Image 1 (cartoon, rainbow, N blue to C red):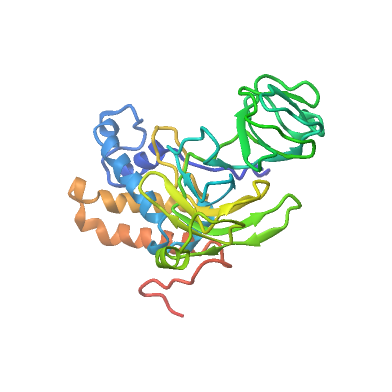
Image 2 (cartoon, one colour):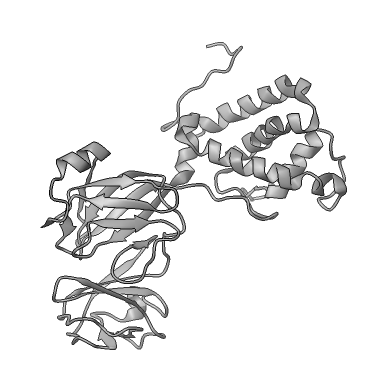
Length: 332
């Protein structure tokens, strides 16, 4: 008998809710999500489900294994005169600041560009580099600033047409960055590591500062220098990264590993934004959260035992990063 050859098992938001309603006897096996039993309760349980994933995604919940799936990588592009950068879903990407990408490509100019140029010539063909229509493109100017615009139309060989003309002159050999995917959709809840990466790929770790260290230990916050440290303020909508200096070299990029919020369950067919091992804890966790709604508090011990067992397994799925948990009644 052949195995399936598949390892992509997942569930949707409504699969989770239906499983909970069946476990509690609110829905009968064979009923569908179009039944009154489901539609009467799905909205309320969807709220509890979203609250639950936010709880499980918090390190203080004791779920280090969950954090593996919350770690994201992004790259922050720098500009002269800017020591603070907004990171998050509503941070503007207009102008020269707040360029925050999931990945990027880089090359240099193959020939000089005058101020007001509507096209630039790269040192390599745009297709070989990976630059295409509508991508954001940044060009190092001779002034030391970084000029940003977007690619207007498909490049022709090494020639790229710009949506906005350059604001200054740029010599041959000046650095060019380009990216398609912004990381603005998620603000970092916490920055785990940050390094300053030069054009040769060499990384210099940046020191994380506390609020007091930043406020009292960086007396001149607008000095022109190479950043060596940062303070991150995770505000409600957009976070702000404060550097200890205004960068002088815009060819450096800050590579950031950060803890990201987990995606919400917004639609019926949405899948979890994390590993399969957390599906069972979600189902049993939502069941426990829903007992009072259906007047079934007397069944709490049974479902709490299932939830705690599922959580213990999921939390320890990554042995190198997870702690060992013992549940009541376990023997060492």
